[in-house]
Length: 66
Image 1 (cartoon, rainbow, N blue to C red):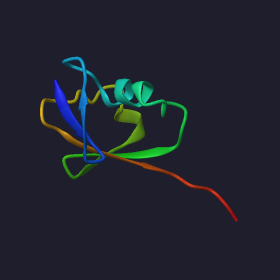
Image 2: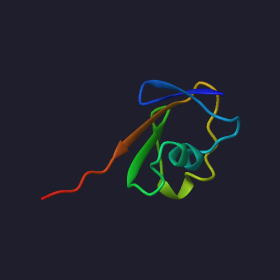
Image 3: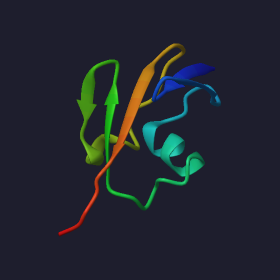
Image 4: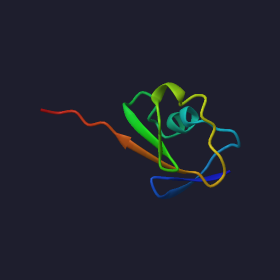
């Protein structure tokens, strides 16, 4: 299936979850915020949230510093 990740096209297996996407992108261990079609998906729901054809996903990295 095709989705858009931060504005760029990505191909995923049908039924892939947000957690699957984060693993593929090397972000599974990072603190990120994920939005799907304009709605924030809480971290605790990433594994259960299946992505669908044409979804628009935005992933934002949390930055630390001081």
